[in-house]
Length: 273
Image (cartoon, rainbow, N blue to C red; front, top):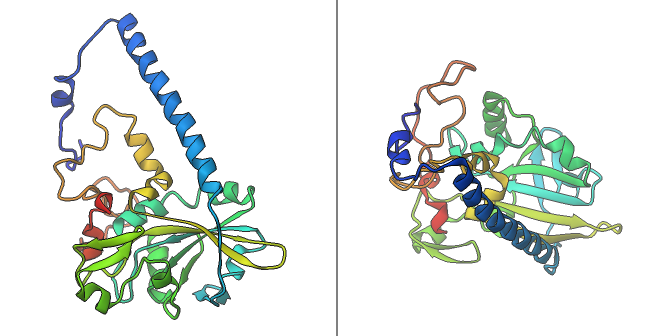
């Protein structure tokens, strides 16, 4: 059993009633009604998200990518909708955030499908391109990853913070001033959505942070189906169990590198933000 699991199966089963198949179906039907209510509420919430007003993007952002310098408009790749994942990887880091890496592990398999719906996905981090490329190669990812090192993009979309901001002990994140930040917490995760019209105008339509990013984490959707669930209550922070996929004990890919501590900002409890 994975050593990171806190509550054992035996402990879990001890708190559950064991019933007849007929009683189980009745309980399941009751839960199914609740699940259908949740699905309907989610549809309404998604529709409300689509009705949000837009903000025109006039600032000329430039990114460094495998094909050279690219503008924000270039990242659309001929489509009208763009999702950017703000991956926590600051200049000089030895590797990217483990939690962001978990999310990134979901990307390659869905990009072709997303493209059929007029959507391009790109990943952006503040680290220089060479550092991103080396980690991307190690992880075996294929998605487009660009550096915003020479632009204000990360700061303007509230996922990177200056030393002066951190010195004040609080930063603007997830649409409010959030306290408890200090040096080493200069990068946080997020996702931002943009739309481009026929005249080439670009609009910012949506951004989400912290637990809003769980929508992109299919791993948790699988875990949530199980009796033990996330089982994270006794961990120092919610995603303390997450490792880069080549650092798990049962990883069968390339030889594992020496264990390294995650960057300090990865230890922030995103559920509290």
